[in-house]
Length: 291
Figure 1 (spheres, rainbow, N blue to C red):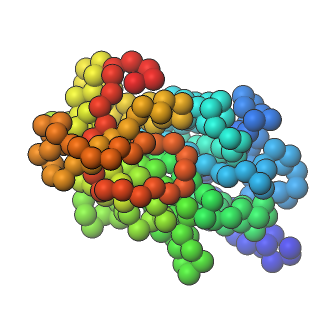
Figure 2: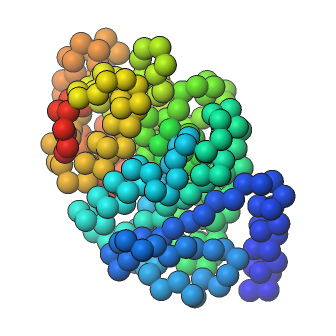
Figure 3: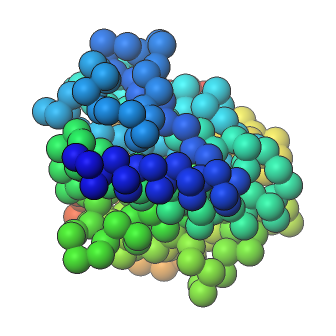
């Protein structure tokens, strides 16, 4: 315990020196509205709502986001309302995310480093089982969870699942450290804004399984790229209760574009920790909740 206290104190110094500070908010069935703030510098015994027997989902917002973003609220409420009990932890990195895109992008590795340290703390103090952990990231948050998963895979095994919601494309080429299918035991990516000038999302199938919603762009009911981009977390939240959000496998990009994907359907989103199937799927939706 004394050694752990030294490590936690060192982490606090690192946060102060590099200027990056994440805040972690815990929601459960017992506290779905008012979160507990989890602070690795204090004893874990003070936290009463974290359940060792429940799986844990960690949500990471993107550029210009915060703990109050619709991304967090929609998904957190959907998990708690429609699924078995989970520990839902919302990561707030708004101090860095609220800056210009270039500055926020540069902060991604440090934010991911701190998230990995936090997960290590949960493993030590809360007996978190890494293989049951599910990381969900939107926009830049998708690359944060990818890099955090990569840092954790140091001979101790990978996290169970990562879900990347329309991962940010700008300055995230193939050698950039972007989210990859090796960052967790299972990586699922939902693409919603991949084409046209000013599009936000990566069009490459970077996950184990990739769902291209309505082909990956021009979402029904949307005007502009922001709406298309945000549809990624909206359909993911809807997937908690809508069993008809299914994709059909695509052999080629042309099949996806022409809406000619056929084969065995696979449910998009949700919380199961692993799926098997093809690399690319097309999902057709409506323009209104629950899509």
